[in-house]
Image (cartoon, rainbow, N blue to C red; front, side, top):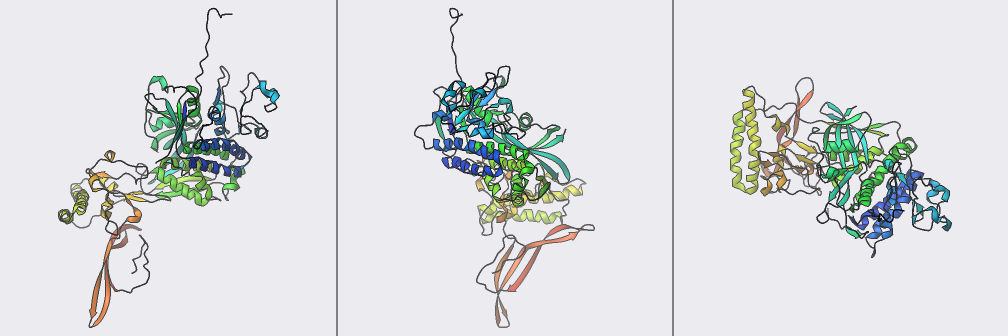
Length: 615
């Protein structure tokens, strides 16, 4: 009726201009293989696996395809706005949202999912005559839209308000040298990162992170990129048109909630404040939905797929904990898993501690291979991804285990025997070290600030003051490695700058005086070193702590009777003593030995053990 006054146009902004799959084909095949174990956990997980497998196969096939399957990629999601009613999400993305936040199945009737269908696409009532669709009685003009049929399966349609969180949480009791805290670990897809393909910020990528907070009880890869819509990407809209950098505590407060509990103090996180990061309760599903609805380029890693699968299984397992108990553990109730390490809540690497808890969990479940199944090793996997997946596993099994981290750090008191002049004498003696080369000169440079603090302690005590607490608190920083190497930092590492073969392990000589930010680091590097007096102190593998003693051959002529002897001398242990009623004090013990040697065929040596070498 109004045709004379108006012209009409319909502009469709759905679709994703391009998708970039990071990693390699083998990564996605690995996920496909891992889904085969889901059937072990029940009928719902078995159906979850059936829905996932055609999707994952399309991901892996894309690497080899001469022509990308446009039909599949265009059906990532089907969003139907509900106006004043509920909005719905369909498409194969719903395979990653089959359980609600409470672990309730929302993937449709299990009996209907695999009813025979011989076409790919959405079921519309007008097509019921083909015999391949749902009965038209299933459709309602005010109900959800028709589901997607793909590879003979019917994919769910869910309300967008029912998209589950893509993260999990687990309680951790923290004992920081006697100060006790109730902590919470949160891990998973907590948002997405925005980047620029050309000049516009038009590309989104799911972002997984982990956080640990005190609570108030109240690598080289081969990505592929392919176009799936012949349109330019739209620039990502940041709230109110401005990028806003959020700190970790604000991210957690936006994406994670539990009644009666809030984040009181953020302790550590993989997330670094970034103005291109946008928080979301499900950083995988909602990133893909955002890319589809707002027409953005999309980047996906194999780790994103796997973390999303784990987050769904976490919801299912916790909702069916008692049904599945015998699958995971042999005990009743909850068993406490505790690790005890050195440090404080401000110095330890919680990521490493989580991996230690994961290793401990592996030893306490019925099937240890489950740990290796959960923890990925894709070509794109970062240390942060490993921690996220460890927390996912801890959260999935929190009905059977409680977790405790006990920190026992620091030395209650130090007694410096001798006089100040003795330590000043050492300070003077090290001046000659530079005569022996560049490495001994670097050794001397690292020693000077340490020995100077020993001297300064005498002055502080004599004047009625307190020695440099910061210095003595940084004596040792131990980084437990779980199933990997453990590291030793702090100023005491200056006494281990050469390994047992005399090879320098004190770091690059040219880097000793460089700031931390000026030296490029990789994810697989050891933890950052202590910087003191402008010098970088070494971080060494604890397996490379050298012997503190030496040996030398001595020929002995005992009144004409000849013997081949060896002398061993140096720090060969420690001596315990008591200050009060208990043996609570240690002191390095240096001793010497001379003995007649006996040659043996095989050399036996226990690295770092309490005994001596045998030759």
